[in-house]
Amino acid sequence: MLETVDPRINIIDKRLAGVKRIIAVSGGKGGIGKSLTAAVLALTLSELGHRVGLLDLDLSAPSTHVILGIEGLYPEEDKGLVPPEIHGIEIMSIVYFSGDNPTPLRGIDISNAMLELLAVTRWGPLDFLIVDTPPGIGDATLDVIRWLKRAEFLVLTTSSKVALETVKKVIRMLRELNVPVIGVIENMRMGGSGLVRRELKEVPVLGEIGFDDKIEDSIGEVNKLLESDFAASIKEIVMRNPGFKLSSYHF
Amino acid sequence: MHEWALAEAVIATVIEESRKEGLVEVRKIKLKIGELQQIETEIFEFALNELIKVQGTLITKMKVEMDIERAIFRCRVCGNEWAFGDASKMSEEESEAIHFAPEVAHAYIRCPSCKSPDFEVLHGRGILIEYIKGR
Ligand SMILES: Nc1ncnc2c1ncn2[C@@H]1O[C@H](COP(=O)(O)OP(=O)(O)OP(=O)(O)O)[C@@H](O)[C@H]1O
Ligand SMILES: [Mg+2]
Ligand SMILES: [Zn+2]
Image (cartoon, rainbow over all chains, first blue to last red; front, top):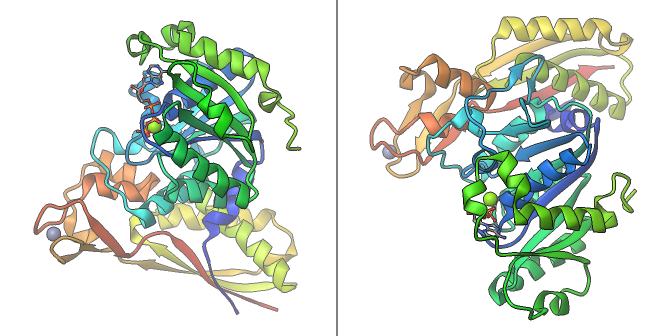
């Protein structure tokens, strides 16, 4: 009678049932600070007393483990996979399994790998699950929208017209799909042009982050990261915007 | 994928789909499981039975038929086709990684003929409920 269903899709909502808010960090272009923002946002929310998880969905080029200096960890096997906890954050990444081997994945593989991770990961009760995504409006982003139905998007841009052009498209797509957008952060701000605020009218601009020329020295060291100018900007943005309150306006 | 997580997903799906169809009793389901999932069938069956026990009457009499589908790869560069079983020589660590996240096969397996990591999984990935029979 009933035919071919993938049971993994069905279990995702249950796996995320104890998660209050899911925030996907996205943005059209590569290298604009999505992963750094995702990692530092997770740290910041955790410092503020929230229970936080971090899911790295950049499956071919995971990097949040590098930013947070995670090494030699492995999820615990208990009726699924329990993500290891580092600095109070539950972290799940494909890197536990792929290690330092290049892992070339095409669209269908990305979807399957993501489905697998979402179906087996047993998150604890969390206030926030922060999701790092690869650049572009590609498979991972579309799968986040399809499978993480409660995900809200935090969109990154730089001050460059080049980044902004793509970010506008991302935002338009999210709005057409009725996906909640918390707002936009302008990263590596140059000058005081105000271009981003002028160009992006439909979504709140949450704040700006300047170019932090010392950030590279903090990569891999959580304490230094938390003391960085970058983290100070993130914290200010979190404190200032209602979009990061636990009970956001979306509910 | 981990057996318990998978069993839970199967049971939850069977219950949901059967309710949608208005079934009062599920008699049989058939599962197709990809070899790449590296499932320990004994643990999986045990998990399924444990879960069936704690559910209500809807699935207490349910029989589960399982089909393990051999994993077959095809190289996108040279067209070579080969079976996961042939590749072998994998370390315990690698095969455990594939067990948890089958797609990381792309990190450990290369085309035996041209060494490319750009191959397609033709068969033997994922898990499907092929049918649910009942009344
Ligand atoms: N405000 C900043 N000041 C200085 N360097 C920054 C800033 N934001 C990000 N970076 C640096 O820029 C580089 C790219 O950042 P990151 O990896 O977070 O970008 P990404 O958008 O995730 O890239 P990808 O699209 O490849 O995933 C990193 O080396 C990061 O440390
Ligand atoms: Mg990144
Ligand atoms: Zn080949």
